[in-house]
Length: 239
View 1 (tube, rainbow, N blue to C red):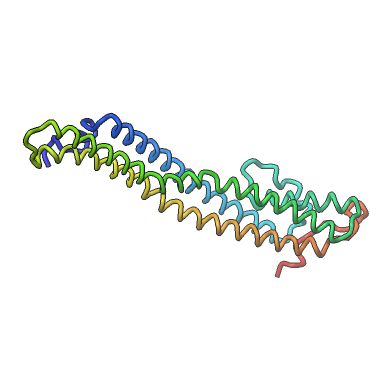
View 2: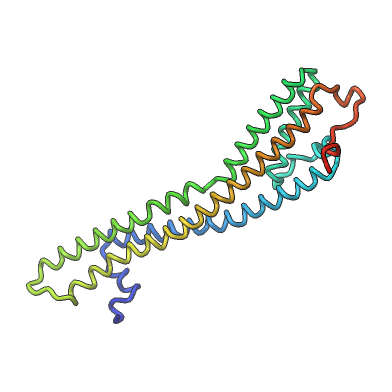
């Protein structure tokens, strides 16, 4: 491979349309890598914060004490915000002296709504990776087809066609496919990995909702704390 067929020379000598395709794919690849690194650290932070709050939740502390600061921090755990939304709704319905089933149903609905909001945040930009993974090879293939077509149109003006005259044009076109694959392959791997991690986070949050609902069910219908009852606690379910 001589210097005329180096990657840089191939890109510089490609047609304008092919260069435009290559530039677009490189920008898409850069954006996907930005999303990938952001997701790696973001999901790691979500898992760590959920585990920290879950340990605190099952430590036997009063749920009333937990509720005082829950959901107020911007960097709090998704599990903490789900707990806060369920606890607020439960206490609100409890003060209105509704029946036990209404208290529990209201708390469940509030936690489900909060769960969906948290899941939407965790899944943000995941669809972008899926789009990059599925579309990039086709965009690169379009650049290759266009480049080969452009090369053959140029060869039509030559009386004698040799391999040396055909190779540069085809090689220039194939670089577009290579860049498309360069953008797509990491996006595919990252998408599958993040989808699996997000499923695990969703299962963890759903399990917490069910466990917390069981605790609230045992306290549903009881008089409010203002009437002199003890604060709600998980101590009775901790082994």
